[in-house]
Length: 304
Image 1 (cartoon, rainbow, N blue to C red):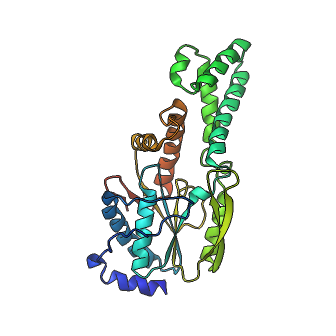
Image 2 (image 1 turned 90 degrees about the vertical axis):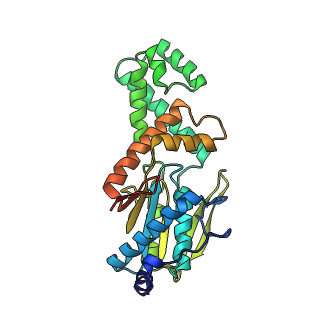
Image 3 (image 1 turned 45 degrees about the vertical axis):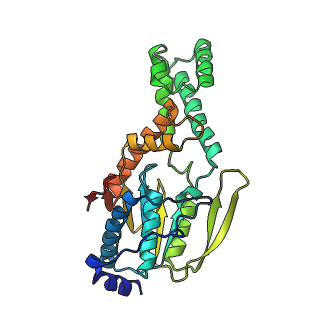
Protein backbone atom coordinates (compact mmCIF):
# COMPACT_ATOMS: atom_id res chain seq x y z
CA UNK A 1 0.00 0.00 0.00
CA UNK A 2 1.27 3.44 -0.93
CA UNK A 3 0.38 4.98 2.42
CA UNK A 4 2.52 2.44 4.23
CA UNK A 5 5.46 3.30 1.96
CA UNK A 6 4.91 7.01 2.54
CA UNK A 7 4.74 6.54 6.31
CA UNK A 8 8.04 4.68 6.24
CA UNK A 9 9.70 7.47 4.23
CA UNK A 10 8.20 10.17 6.46
CA UNK A 11 9.87 8.64 9.49
CA UNK A 12 13.27 9.39 8.00
CA UNK A 13 12.45 12.14 5.51
CA UNK A 14 14.72 14.78 7.05
CA UNK A 15 17.73 12.47 6.86
CA UNK A 16 16.77 10.51 3.75
CA UNK A 17 19.78 9.93 1.53
CA UNK A 18 19.05 10.83 -2.07
CA UNK A 19 20.67 8.47 -4.58
CA UNK A 20 23.17 9.87 -7.07
CA UNK A 21 21.76 10.34 -10.63
CA UNK A 22 22.62 7.53 -13.05
CA UNK A 23 22.75 7.40 -16.85
CA UNK A 24 19.69 5.18 -17.30
CA UNK A 25 17.38 7.29 -15.14
CA UNK A 26 13.72 7.24 -16.23
CA UNK A 27 12.45 10.21 -18.21
CA UNK A 28 9.33 11.26 -20.08
CA UNK A 29 7.96 8.94 -22.76
CA UNK A 30 8.31 11.40 -25.68
CA UNK A 31 10.14 9.61 -28.53
CA UNK A 32 13.72 10.80 -28.90
CA UNK A 33 13.73 12.73 -25.64
CA UNK A 34 17.13 13.01 -24.01
CA UNK A 35 17.45 14.44 -20.53
CA UNK A 36 20.73 15.93 -19.38
CA UNK A 37 20.70 16.28 -15.62
CA UNK A 38 21.59 19.76 -14.43
CA UNK A 39 23.35 19.86 -11.07
CA UNK A 40 21.55 23.12 -10.34
CA UNK A 41 18.14 21.39 -10.44
CA UNK A 42 19.04 18.49 -8.15
CA UNK A 43 18.42 20.40 -4.88
CA UNK A 44 15.15 21.73 -6.34
CA UNK A 45 13.96 18.20 -7.09
CA UNK A 46 14.96 17.04 -3.62
CA UNK A 47 12.97 19.86 -2.03
CA UNK A 48 9.96 18.95 -4.18
CA UNK A 49 10.33 15.25 -3.30
CA UNK A 50 10.02 16.04 0.41
CA UNK A 51 7.00 18.28 -0.19
CA UNK A 52 5.26 15.71 -2.38
CA UNK A 53 5.80 12.88 0.11
CA UNK A 54 4.21 15.00 2.86
CA UNK A 55 1.28 16.05 0.65
CA UNK A 56 0.57 12.52 -0.56
CA UNK A 57 0.52 11.19 2.99
CA UNK A 58 -1.77 13.99 4.14
CA UNK A 59 -4.21 13.32 1.30
CA UNK A 60 -4.32 9.62 2.14
CA UNK A 61 -4.99 8.17 -1.33
CA UNK A 62 -3.19 5.21 -2.91
CA UNK A 63 -2.75 6.49 -6.46
CA UNK A 64 -1.63 9.97 -7.43
CA UNK A 65 -1.38 12.07 -10.57
CA UNK A 66 1.20 14.84 -10.17
CA UNK A 67 1.46 17.51 -12.85
CA UNK A 68 4.72 19.38 -13.49
CA UNK A 69 4.15 22.49 -15.60
CA UNK A 70 5.99 25.64 -16.61
CA UNK A 71 7.45 27.42 -19.61
CA UNK A 72 10.18 26.19 -21.95
CA UNK A 73 13.48 25.98 -20.11
CA UNK A 74 11.89 25.96 -16.64
CA UNK A 75 13.33 22.51 -15.97
CA UNK A 76 10.21 20.36 -16.35
CA UNK A 77 11.90 17.38 -18.03
CA UNK A 78 14.91 17.25 -15.70
CA UNK A 79 12.85 17.81 -12.55
CA UNK A 80 10.33 15.14 -13.56
CA UNK A 81 13.11 12.70 -14.36
CA UNK A 82 14.74 13.27 -10.96
CA UNK A 83 11.44 13.01 -9.09
CA UNK A 84 10.54 9.79 -10.88
CA UNK A 85 13.96 8.39 -10.05
CA UNK A 86 13.78 9.39 -6.38
CA UNK A 87 10.27 7.99 -5.97
CA UNK A 88 11.21 4.67 -7.56
CA UNK A 89 14.35 4.42 -5.44
CA UNK A 90 12.22 5.05 -2.35
CA UNK A 91 9.94 2.14 -3.25
CA UNK A 92 7.14 4.27 -4.71
CA UNK A 93 6.62 3.10 -8.28
CA UNK A 94 6.36 6.11 -10.59
CA UNK A 95 5.90 6.68 -14.33
CA UNK A 96 6.80 9.88 -16.23
CA UNK A 97 4.29 10.85 -18.94
CA UNK A 98 5.12 13.55 -21.49
CA UNK A 99 2.21 15.72 -22.53
CA UNK A 100 4.13 16.65 -25.68
CA UNK A 101 2.76 13.45 -27.22
CA UNK A 102 -0.75 14.92 -27.23
CA UNK A 103 -0.97 17.93 -29.56
CA UNK A 104 -3.34 17.49 -32.48
CA UNK A 105 -0.64 18.27 -35.04
CA UNK A 106 3.06 17.56 -35.42
CA UNK A 107 5.26 20.61 -34.59
CA UNK A 108 5.72 21.71 -38.21
CA UNK A 109 1.99 21.68 -38.94
CA UNK A 110 1.10 23.21 -35.59
CA UNK A 111 3.47 26.11 -36.17
CA UNK A 112 1.82 26.65 -39.56
CA UNK A 113 -1.65 26.51 -38.00
CA UNK A 114 -0.68 29.15 -35.45
CA UNK A 115 0.40 31.49 -38.23
CA UNK A 116 -2.75 30.71 -40.22
CA UNK A 117 -5.01 31.49 -37.25
CA UNK A 118 -3.25 34.80 -36.65
CA UNK A 119 -3.34 35.91 -40.28
CA UNK A 120 -6.84 34.80 -41.22
CA UNK A 121 -8.42 36.39 -38.16
CA UNK A 122 -6.29 39.50 -38.58
CA UNK A 123 -7.70 39.97 -42.08
CA UNK A 124 -11.25 39.42 -40.81
CA UNK A 125 -10.60 42.08 -38.19
CA UNK A 126 -9.66 44.60 -40.87
CA UNK A 127 -12.87 43.80 -42.73
CA UNK A 128 -14.94 44.13 -39.56
CA UNK A 129 -13.45 47.52 -38.71
CA UNK A 130 -13.74 48.82 -42.27
CA UNK A 131 -9.96 49.11 -42.61
CA UNK A 132 -9.41 46.53 -45.35
CA UNK A 133 -8.41 47.69 -48.83
CA UNK A 134 -6.53 46.43 -51.86
CA UNK A 135 -3.60 48.62 -50.85
CA UNK A 136 -3.61 47.20 -47.33
CA UNK A 137 -3.58 43.68 -48.75
CA UNK A 138 -0.56 44.49 -50.91
CA UNK A 139 1.30 45.73 -47.84
CA UNK A 140 0.28 42.68 -45.79
CA UNK A 141 1.37 40.33 -48.57
CA UNK A 142 4.82 41.90 -48.49
CA UNK A 143 4.93 41.65 -44.71
CA UNK A 144 3.97 37.97 -44.97
CA UNK A 145 6.94 37.36 -47.22
CA UNK A 146 9.22 39.01 -44.66
CA UNK A 147 7.32 37.30 -41.78
CA UNK A 148 7.01 40.63 -39.98
CA UNK A 149 3.23 41.14 -40.08
CA UNK A 150 3.05 40.51 -36.32
CA UNK A 151 5.81 43.01 -35.51
CA UNK A 152 4.41 46.08 -33.67
CA UNK A 153 7.15 48.20 -35.25
CA UNK A 154 5.53 47.73 -38.67
CA UNK A 155 2.39 49.42 -37.35
CA UNK A 156 4.34 52.66 -36.97
CA UNK A 157 4.31 52.98 -40.76
CA UNK A 158 0.86 51.45 -41.24
CA UNK A 159 -1.44 52.42 -38.31
CA UNK A 160 -4.27 50.20 -39.60
CA UNK A 161 -1.96 47.22 -39.01
CA UNK A 162 -2.69 47.58 -35.28
CA UNK A 163 -6.22 46.36 -36.01
CA UNK A 164 -4.90 43.34 -37.91
CA UNK A 165 -2.47 42.51 -35.10
CA UNK A 166 -5.08 42.98 -32.37
CA UNK A 167 -7.58 40.59 -33.94
CA UNK A 168 -4.87 38.09 -34.85
CA UNK A 169 -3.50 38.07 -31.33
CA UNK A 170 -6.94 37.56 -29.79
CA UNK A 171 -7.58 34.62 -32.12
CA UNK A 172 -4.23 33.13 -31.20
CA UNK A 173 -5.19 33.32 -27.53
CA UNK A 174 -8.15 31.13 -28.32
CA UNK A 175 -5.91 28.55 -29.99
CA UNK A 176 -2.68 28.29 -27.98
CA UNK A 177 -2.91 25.66 -25.28
CA UNK A 178 -6.63 25.17 -25.89
CA UNK A 179 -8.69 22.21 -27.10
CA UNK A 180 -8.16 23.15 -30.74
CA UNK A 181 -4.43 22.68 -30.29
CA UNK A 182 -4.11 20.03 -27.56
CA UNK A 183 -5.98 16.72 -27.17
CA UNK A 184 -7.03 17.12 -23.54
CA UNK A 185 -9.71 14.45 -23.88
CA UNK A 186 -7.12 11.75 -24.57
CA UNK A 187 -4.89 12.93 -21.72
CA UNK A 188 -7.88 12.87 -19.36
CA UNK A 189 -8.83 9.39 -20.52
CA UNK A 190 -5.35 8.13 -19.59
CA UNK A 191 -5.39 9.84 -16.19
CA UNK A 192 -8.83 8.39 -15.49
CA UNK A 193 -7.72 4.89 -16.52
CA UNK A 194 -4.70 5.14 -14.24
CA UNK A 195 -6.72 6.38 -11.27
CA UNK A 196 -9.29 3.59 -11.57
CA UNK A 197 -6.50 1.02 -11.56
CA UNK A 198 -6.29 -0.17 -15.18
CA UNK A 199 -3.21 -2.36 -15.40
CA UNK A 200 -2.61 -1.91 -19.14
CA UNK A 201 -3.00 1.48 -20.83
CA UNK A 202 -2.29 2.40 -24.45
CA UNK A 203 -0.09 5.50 -24.45
CA UNK A 204 0.30 7.75 -27.49
CA UNK A 205 3.69 8.36 -29.07
CA UNK A 206 4.30 11.20 -31.49
CA UNK A 207 7.40 12.10 -33.45
CA UNK A 208 8.12 15.07 -35.67
CA UNK A 209 6.77 13.67 -38.97
CA UNK A 210 3.19 12.95 -39.95
CA UNK A 211 3.76 9.20 -40.15
CA UNK A 212 5.38 9.03 -36.69
CA UNK A 213 2.27 8.31 -34.62
CA UNK A 214 1.65 5.11 -32.71
CA UNK A 215 0.63 3.66 -29.34
CA UNK A 216 2.58 1.62 -26.82
CA UNK A 217 0.83 -0.48 -24.21
CA UNK A 218 2.29 0.37 -20.81
CA UNK A 219 2.02 -1.87 -17.76
CA UNK A 220 0.76 0.23 -14.84
CA UNK A 221 0.16 -2.66 -12.46
CA UNK A 222 1.72 -1.66 -9.16
CA UNK A 223 2.34 1.93 -10.27
CA UNK A 224 1.66 4.37 -7.46
CA UNK A 225 2.32 7.75 -9.08
CA UNK A 226 1.94 9.12 -12.60
CA UNK A 227 3.87 12.34 -13.22
CA UNK A 228 2.50 14.40 -16.13
CA UNK A 229 5.23 16.71 -17.46
CA UNK A 230 3.79 19.30 -19.83
CA UNK A 231 3.55 23.03 -20.42
CA UNK A 232 -0.24 22.67 -20.34
CA UNK A 233 -0.67 20.26 -17.41
CA UNK A 234 -1.71 23.18 -15.20
CA UNK A 235 -4.71 23.86 -17.45
CA UNK A 236 -8.25 23.69 -16.09
CA UNK A 237 -8.94 21.29 -18.96
CA UNK A 238 -6.70 18.61 -17.43
CA UNK A 239 -8.87 16.54 -15.11
CA UNK A 240 -7.72 14.17 -12.37
CA UNK A 241 -4.56 15.93 -11.14
CA UNK A 242 -4.03 15.48 -7.40
CA UNK A 243 -1.02 17.75 -6.92
CA UNK A 244 0.02 20.45 -9.40
CA UNK A 245 3.61 21.74 -9.37
CA UNK A 246 4.54 24.92 -11.24
CA UNK A 247 8.17 25.61 -12.11
CA UNK A 248 8.09 29.37 -12.39
CA UNK A 249 10.20 31.12 -15.02
CA UNK A 250 10.16 34.54 -16.66
CA UNK A 251 9.43 35.33 -20.34
CA UNK A 252 13.08 36.39 -20.71
CA UNK A 253 14.29 33.00 -19.45
CA UNK A 254 11.88 31.20 -21.75
CA UNK A 255 13.02 33.22 -24.77
CA UNK A 256 16.68 32.63 -23.94
CA UNK A 257 16.01 28.91 -23.80
CA UNK A 258 14.18 28.97 -27.15
CA UNK A 259 17.10 30.83 -28.71
CA UNK A 260 19.52 28.29 -27.27
CA UNK A 261 17.58 25.39 -28.79
CA UNK A 262 16.49 27.06 -32.03
CA UNK A 263 17.35 25.34 -35.30
CA UNK A 264 15.45 27.53 -37.76
CA UNK A 265 16.69 30.94 -36.62
CA UNK A 266 13.15 32.18 -35.86
CA UNK A 267 13.15 31.90 -32.07
CA UNK A 268 13.56 35.67 -31.67
CA UNK A 269 11.01 36.64 -34.32
CA UNK A 270 8.11 38.96 -33.50
CA UNK A 271 5.65 36.11 -33.96
CA UNK A 272 7.46 33.73 -31.59
CA UNK A 273 7.79 36.58 -29.08
CA UNK A 274 4.03 37.11 -29.25
CA UNK A 275 3.38 33.37 -28.81
CA UNK A 276 5.64 33.30 -25.74
CA UNK A 277 3.88 36.34 -24.25
CA UNK A 278 0.46 34.70 -24.67
CA UNK A 279 1.71 31.39 -23.26
CA UNK A 280 3.25 33.20 -20.29
CA UNK A 281 -0.02 34.99 -19.57
CA UNK A 282 -1.80 31.64 -19.48
CA UNK A 283 0.92 30.03 -17.38
CA UNK A 284 0.76 32.88 -14.84
CA UNK A 285 -3.02 32.58 -14.58
CA UNK A 286 -2.90 28.80 -14.25
CA UNK A 287 -0.12 29.07 -11.70
CA UNK A 288 -2.13 31.42 -9.51
CA UNK A 289 -5.36 29.44 -9.85
CA UNK A 290 -4.27 25.81 -9.96
CA UNK A 291 -0.76 25.25 -8.58
CA UNK A 292 -0.43 23.53 -5.21
CA UNK A 293 3.34 24.05 -5.25
CA UNK A 294 5.24 26.89 -6.92
CA UNK A 295 9.02 26.87 -7.05
CA UNK A 296 11.15 29.61 -8.56
CA UNK A 297 14.05 29.19 -10.97
CA UNK A 298 16.35 29.78 -7.99
CA UNK A 299 14.72 26.94 -6.04
CA UNK A 300 12.70 29.09 -3.64
CA UNK A 301 9.33 27.62 -2.63
CA UNK A 302 6.72 30.33 -3.30
CA UNK A 303 3.72 28.09 -2.44
CA UNK A 304 2.67 26.58 -0.08
